[in-house]
Length: 123
Image (cartoon, rainbow, N blue to C red; front, side, top):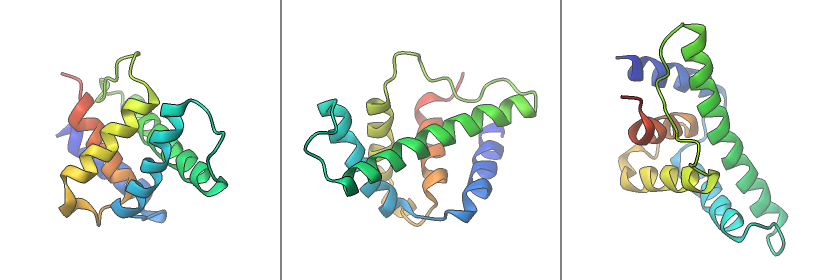
């Protein structure tokens, strides 16, 4: 129940952006090679913009979920180990979206929330 409430809250919060899973895939597919290379050299400004947007969406979604737990005085709903890198998170998001093609019409933030909850839900 808590997972659903947080996911609904994040989806409502993201309603103003309302880009979909296709856009999210583009963005995060741009982030992965930048993080794998460990440098921005050789990437176009468009690719770097997309990469930065993906990274910001993932970070923002996670921070919002954590903040909502604190505001509502709930136990943490997501538990991401400290050694999980931004690269791993981007791969989790891309894999989730690719594995759930029927969800492509959902908002970017909703998809990220579902990917994170599926992989890092606190027990």
